[in-house]
Image (tube, rainbow, N blue to C red):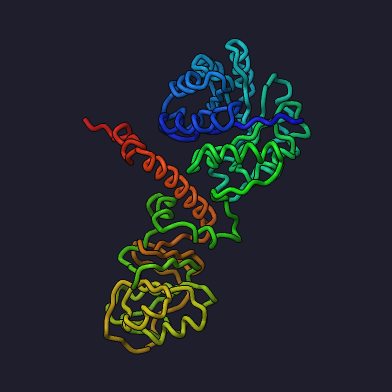
Length: 432
């Protein structure tokens, strides 16, 4: 029977959190390999490798150094700190790989060559056969996962031509690891499905079961969504999650829901008009597709261009919601009609249909450029716009943000504080 190893990638930035997660994981799988991930090593240095080895002397400690140069020196550093396996990039020069291997032999460690970033992986695998490499790693990085890349595509091809044991990494969880095991992977590397879990012990048990039994085991953690599932992905996150995923950008300022409780998601149809002129907004209802979000720029005008009758028309058409950089009226009626409406002002006064403006053109308000086809998400915290070309990536990154927050929440519930969990004082900028 194939003995497949579970390697747990501790891609955190604080050692106390990494060690705590490792503790629970080892209780579930005493033979797992523990990887000091690249962010963790960059944050904590060689000390985290020492701590892992001292705390877990019977487990293989992997140092994901991602070495690209000075192979001998960095392998020596990691080996002396306690690393059993050290990762070097396949993109490194052959001389760097050769020197790293010689250093590893000298200090009793092993080398895993990571194929991340290599375009022709098959060619590079063949080139690496002349070296005494201990392991290869077919790795789809976190940033690549966010745009939909998956490790399964050429994994089998790599394994078929390789005489070296192959590890695989790339957003794997209990529902996906069986495919990599079936393909012949010797090492299954799992990160977020364990490190972001509310229950590390049971998540590790589930993944180990999926590996041993080669079957899909249900997980409650989020998966990575493809382009056809963007709306579903956005339905699982909040606008603050999305803002964080966009590096604190995307929020349309000064626009609020007319009532709390909405979770609006859809593609924008833009409308531009002038204060009080409601002709183009009403015409846009007829042009809009079902579930579209009308985004109407009135330049902040305070005369209402939307009310009860427009809302009825939008509901009948199947419009998903309305965002107005201007005013609405008939508030007591439209609140009860349950169409998500976000506006800047509420006013009793309505204007007249004059027909100025246009439908479908690029507009700009609330510090955001909005185009027809962009994704619009609204909830109690406000409205955010996601450019359509980045929607899949941002949806997946927002889910990743939510998963991280879920894990931190559990650590707080278990007796920590937000400050202690995140080690805020450690990361404060030193002035003077």
